[in-house]
Amino acid sequence: MSAPGAATTYYATMASPVGELLMTASDDGLTGVYLPGEGLEPASDWVQDPARFEACRRQLDEYFAGDRVTFDLPLAPPGTAFQHEVWTKLVEIDYGTTISYTELAHRVGRPNSQRAVGGANGRNPVCIIVPCHRVVGANGSLTGYSAGIDSKRWLLEFERATAAR
Image (tube, rainbow, N blue to C red; front, side, top):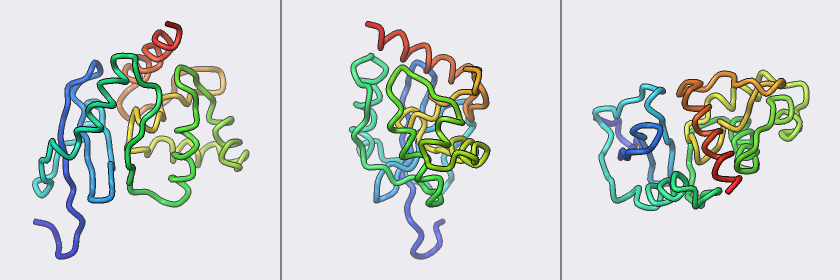
């Protein structure tokens, strides 16, 4: 049971080519999209509300069909001001491309903070929609991904293939 005055967490799931996605939201907007490799399960006090996620589900289906490269959803992920600053820059990375953590740190305006920027990138709770998978190592290597490197590789290869159509 939630504490008095605590925000309600709503959730729904959907099938996708990378496995069943768990979507979460508050009254303010989408708070998370989690891939299976992240191991998140709904808490006992969360409220299942598939209708709340219709737009999210539709836009993700369009993405996986190769028909959508950006998203237009109200986002409300929990995080610090710095994390939100980094996540805002992630949304600006072009579909089908990658940048390095160093480049992301430059874009955030903190060129000497690659580790902090990488940490914020890794804590992004809205996978795919806020495309943290588009950030790679300086040499192009696929470095850490909360849902696993195989999911990151799949998303990048999928985007490159559909961008080339």
